[in-house]
Length: 83
Image (tube, rainbow, N blue to C red; front, side, top):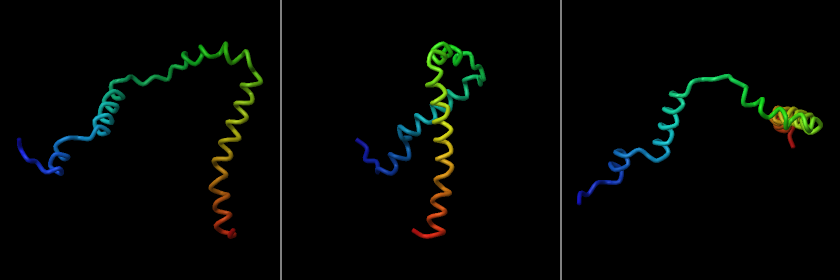
């Protein structure tokens, strides 16, 4: 059995995360880019059954985006004005 230092063994073998990242990058390069929205049209019958829920989801999405944008401004205000 050969005695190899742990640093040399680590240098010779990529980590599992590095291998997975490389495999995902290769798979993404092989895939064709598509802007086809046809799969989303299959959801249309389900969305039209509950228009109020769809509208509420849209409103809450806008509120969530606004809150996300407002948080740094609130933090700036607290830092500038003091607690």
